[in-house]
Length: 264
Picture 1 (cartoon, rainbow, N blue to C red):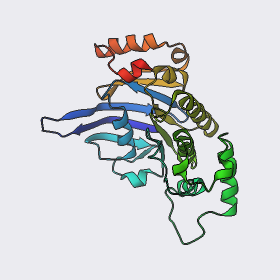
Picture 2: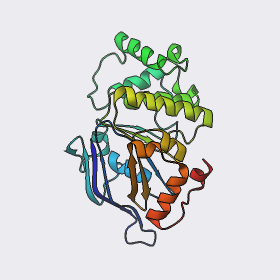
Picture 3: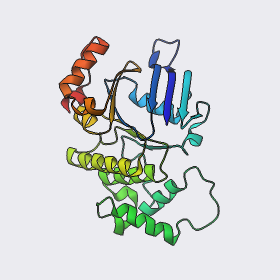
Picture 4: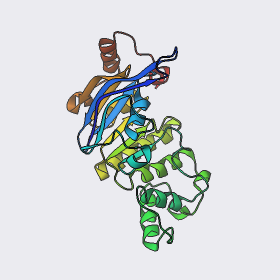
């Protein structure tokens, strides 16, 4: 469903600030894979998601989604294949529009817009049931401005928006990092439910190693722009945080350096 072949991305090439963010990155996800991604500061995790989305062109390599080479496609054309939830709850929604209007926009991703009623009666009924499934009591507030919601509520709505059209790949970019622990746990559980129910191929970056072990069927660790550890199935389920730290030391030759992840 997703394949990255020898992907290279260098920022500020030829200058004193040159940074090799992705260094021959190779990764292949089968349909239905739920892969958690961890790594130290500057490992290339978010850069990898930006490369998949086409936020900027890569310097070398290929990005293939569902068998189609999308390397040359701009970001707006790749949007038809992808769903993404960002770290900042304010990023994924339009604050001055209602919950129903945000969902309607997501439902029309990749489609041509015409002059017709924005939301039909059937769509409103569908959105009611979808929002009700979140169990946040928002189903009776569909016309409320999204900007009035809490961070956790906004992330939950963004999750619905990102998965509404069952994207080829769902990208979760540390989407609980800005939330308090209790809200983060609820949003993670909701993410797991949505991924399972829709059988979505998913990449989830997280700074919490326990969450990386708990969720998904596969875990990868990145360092200096490439994958240094890839584990799945029963082996992944039996992992401990100490095992991850040891594996990082073995693969990278150094200690794991990420204060936020260590504190988690």
